[in-house]
Length: 421
Image (cartoon, rainbow, N blue to C red):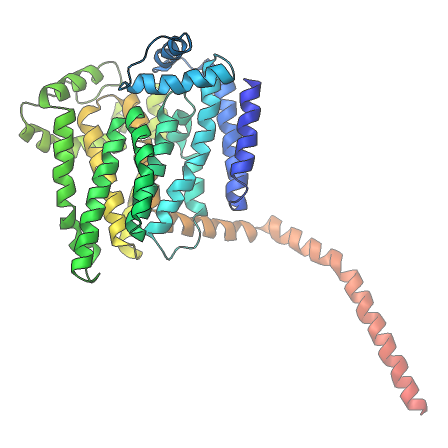
């Protein structure tokens, strides 16, 4: 485990060097928090999640047992087994590696934000929000696939956005292997990337047909093809019967919500989609508190609401690239609707929505940056900072006063000389 911690620290130090000091320092603090949580806090928690499942499968892979090439559990178990071989067969090793993945995720998210809002010159506020958003911070350190799949899916979406924004088809080609990796870990996130590409491509075609003289609202109908594609993919992966089985499987335990709900047809699915999407994005609500975990989720709800409002306000008030907005918006909307239709447990919901919370922060990037700069100015103008500045200035005055005095003496001597002449 100590070797894994050392390797993660060195890797972050090397990878963060090209980036601004705000990210290097804040990322270092966040990484230290993830390591502390992994080593000290996580072993003391009474929750098990699916940690034992991934650990058992990783040990099976290490032992040389065959794996299912299309199993997402086996896909991550293969990565976990590789970590076990390099470091140690301990789930804490995976938690440590996940901490590194978590602090790297803000980088592709910031790249998406700069594509979305070309007029913002910095994304420090966004980076800080992504590094320390409460529940995603917690779940990223769990020894499961959430941190790795979120990082890879965010990088994949950044490549899709870049390909659309620059009309760079080679970027789209290079994204194919990454798409395959995301598909193995979480096929639904890979399919969301396809929906984003179709929506962005449709918006790009509409923009070209109108010589770029169409606004964001007018481009929304261009996303209809992506909706059709998304519905077809969802129906192919999860027919109504399979959707009901997965819904009933997850609607168990004390953290279940909307119990007893079932879909009789695709009309029921369409009618239930809006309310279940709201539950997926914001639940649990105050009346749902039944455990310490629910209380922690409720505590982060105000931050989630603020970011959601800021996202809507930023899209309305800040000039955004329409094609990028349509692509990222399609990824987000299809994701919260799709996950909302199958998730029925607060624990699972909070884990699955991390990437969509990050996308809300991406949409809210201008507001987050404004808040960060305002806070920075307030801190710099605080009484303690002002006192320190005055003290430092006072410490520099004697040499300056002495220098002025010496100059005055020289001037007086020159005056006396002129008087003698």
